Image (tube, rainbow, N blue to C red; front, side, top):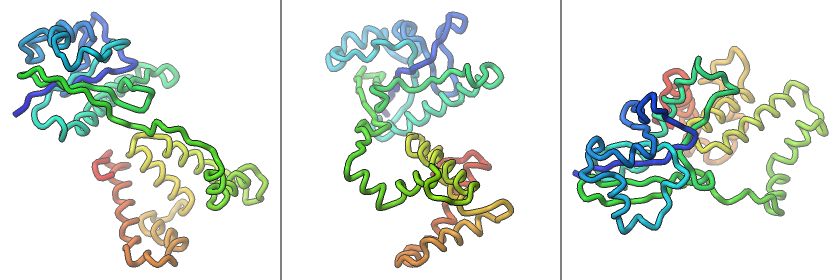
Length: 269
């Protein structure tokens, strides 16, 4: 079985001499770059890490380590291609665990935000080293669409045909509605916008569900019962509502919402 080291630059994280320039969460090591270059046996490498990098003909054209201070290192076994996405998610989760240490240490204004080191904030740049052969594989995983949203004629026509133009008139006061409803629509638009701009699927999902509950239910309602019913009021007339069993699908969405909210379980999202 192949024996790998996943290595990914981390932005916004420093590790001091007090901690010997490294800290392990559960399975991921966070290591200061210069120390990583000195490490060998501790990582299961026969040669010094720095020597492996310099000798590798497939890697010496890249400036992967420029402007990098800290690296996340995750040892794993198995198929590198099949496990790549799973490994990145695991490293992200351990970064989140590390970030939770700021509770009671930094207040919200002074909290530190650290993340994968990104290329133009759209890609995760990382490498894998096979520890026996010293084979190095470099990958760029896209996390966000690098193409800008273009506000053009097609976009504007869509805004007028669907909802956005009227939404702006409502929350801007041009179209008169009940004041509390106008405020609710404004909050909903902000939350849906945050959902659209986030690359975190679970965060986007829960924001969407909160908006549905906010607009279609009221305090005292049994959400699991009333949410599918009120969505059906809007969409039940379409031909595929029954054919594709949308009532059951909406119920399943609510179950996933409850699993996330009450148990922190986002695996099914």
